[in-house]
Structure formats: structure tokens, C-alpha cells
Image 1 (tube, rainbow, N blue to C red):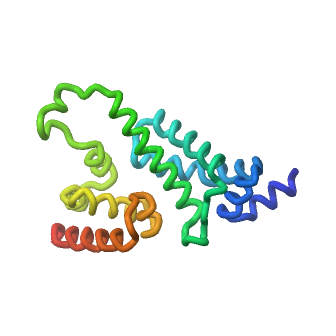
Image 2 (cartoon, rainbow, N blue to C red):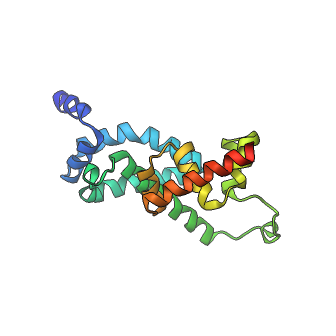
Image 3 (cartoon, helix red, strand yellow):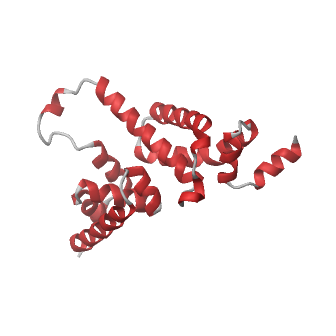
Length: 186
């Protein structure tokens, strides 16, 4: 048992996903051990509700267990952690949609401009001062790209997968966002 753990410890995440696809529970446990803390931190950056984060984590790893065979990996230029983040990010969006669908908006929400959007509040908590103001002034599609690439540290490919955009569009939006930020901060 000890040698199996040592052997799994030496494998990269992509190889672990390949073993999970074959039903290897020990590989799944090692993948979880390595990626769960990192994934939880990334999800908490986007959602302060611990219950939603816990649900998304559980749903994400269940999806990994079930769909590991569908992971294309480096053959298409992806990474196992990028694939995992894409699964989790989509589950988080689904959780937000479920919650929004079942929630009754408070009376103040009916007033235009009464409360900032959740994304605005998250940005304010993450980035403050002039940079935060400049970031909040960006068009939503530019802000999404910049947030994924800069705040979350995602690659162009991972951002494209997360947002469902072509890589060229992500690059263009990132460039436009940086130019707009420079102008605002100048």
C-alpha cells in the first residue's frame, strides 16, 4: 500500500485523471488531496457562501469521477487542473442560477441602481482603490476575461474554455481590457 501511494504521489495530475478514468480510487483520492485546497480557494474568490462552495466541490469531484474518460488533456493543449477548474466554474454558475431561480428578490432589488451586482461586490473585496474602480468600469465581457486571467491566474486556453469563447477572442478582449485600464488609470 505504501509503494502505491508513493507511486501515485510521483504522477502528474493528467496521469492521475487517466487512472481515475479506469476506476482507480487511490488515484482519485490523490487527485482530490492535491487539488481540493486549491479549488476551494478559487471558488471562495467567486462565492462567499460556504454551503454553495461545498456543494460545488462535491458536484465537481463527482463529475470528475464520472467523466474522467472524457478528459482530452495535453492532446488538445489542456491541463488536468484547467479541466477541473472548468468543471467547477460551470457547476458554480449552475448553483448561482439555481439559487437565483428559487430566490425571491428583495423589494430594494426592484429599484434601478439600488444595490451593486454580486460581481461588483466581489471585485470590490478583491481589488480596491483606483485599480478596482477602473476594473469595475470595464465592459462586463472585458472584465470577465481580465478577472479570469489576472485575478484567477488562468491561461488564455483555460479562460477560453471557462467562458466558452475562442482563444483569439479571449486575447482580443484581454488586450482591449488592458488598454482601457491604462487609459482609466492614466
